[in-house]
Length: 395
Ligand code: SAH
Image 1 (spheres, helix red, strand yellow):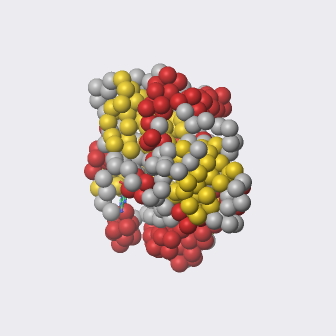
Image 2 (cartoon, rainbow, N blue to C red):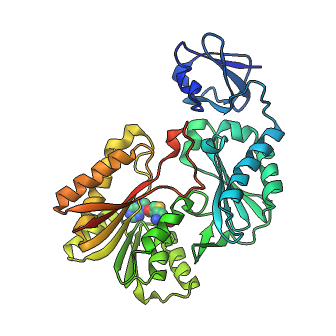
Image 3 (cartoon, rainbow, N blue to C red):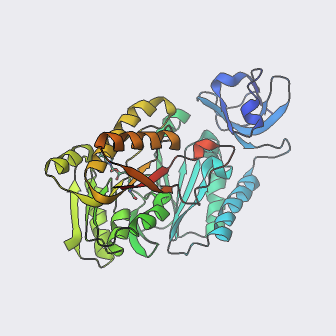
C-alpha cells in the first residue's frame, strides 16, 4: 500500500478524526500514487491513521475515507457509504418523492468532495475531489441503483475544482431529461429548479426550513427579500399572506424563474415587485426614497470562503445589515444569513450587533437559523457548519 507519512506532531487532527491532511503536514509520500489513488496516512512514528485519497499537488494532500486499516476502497465501499447516507435521510426525514433533499453532504457523510441532491426524481451530483473523481463510475452506478432516479445530472462546476486540479464536468450521466427544469414541492410551495443552469446543483436546499420559518412571520407585512434567487423566501411570504414582497437579485435568469414560480403557485403578481439590481446599491436607493418594510431578508452569496477573507466579508455583511436595520419600521424583523465558512456564528452575531448599533436601533435576537438537517455537520469536521442566521426584531 502506498503511504503518506506525516511530520512529527502533525497526526493530532487526524487522531480527532478530522479528514483532511494539509500539504504542510506531509513529510513524504512512499510509493507511486497519483491523484485520487488510495493511500494509508501514517504518523511520523509509523502509527496508522487513516485510509485516504491522495492528491499530491493540492493544498489538501489527502482526504480520509475511513479510519480502519483493513478497509478496502472499492466499488462495494462506495455502495455501502451511499446506502448509509441515503438510508439516514429515509429513516429520519422520509421526504416525499416530489420534494427535494440533500442525499450526500460531503465530508459529513464520509464522502469528501461529493454532494448529491435529489430534485423529485432527478439526482444531481457534484464531484469536487480527486478521490471521488477517481471513483466516479462506482459512485454514479451505486446512486442509480439506490435511488432509481429518472436521470442523474452532473454539476461539477464549482470554484473549488481548480484547487483540486480538476476540470469542470457538467451534463447528463444517466437516464433522460427532456428539459433541464425540474419541478419540486417544498413546504407546500411548487418550485421550478434549473438543474443545468441554476446555482450550485440548482437550488439552495440548505435554506428549506428557514424559508418556511421566515415566511410564517410574513402575514400582513411588507416584505423585502434581498438576494432572492428564484424566489424561495418570496413564495413562502406570499403563501403566508404578506401584504407585498419586493425581491432583489442581480441575476435576470433567477428573477425570471422566480416570476414563473409565482405564476406556478397561482399567486397574483399584484403583491410582487421584482428588482434586477445590485443589493448594495439598491438598499441605498430605498433608503434615499424613504421606503420602509416590516420584514427584510438578507441571504447573500458566500462573501468569505475561508477565514483569511473574513475581514473583507465582514465589511460586506456590516453594510447590508446596517442598511437593512435602517429600512425597517418599528417592530420590524430582519432575517439575516451568512453562508461564509470563514465567518463563524460568533463573528456574524458581532457584525450584526455592530450594524444595529450604527443604525441607531435596539434589536433583539428572537431566532437562530442553521442549515436543514439533511446537511449534517460531522462533529469531527466543524467546517461543515457554514450557514448561520439570526432573526432580529427591532424596537
Ligand atoms: N435566498 C435564496 C438564495 C440566495 S443565493 C434562496 O432561498 O434560494 C444568493 C443570490 O444572490 C443569488 O441569486 C445571486 O444571483 C445573488 N447575488 C449575488 N450578488 C448579488 C448582488 N451584489 N446584488 C444582488 N444579488 C446578488
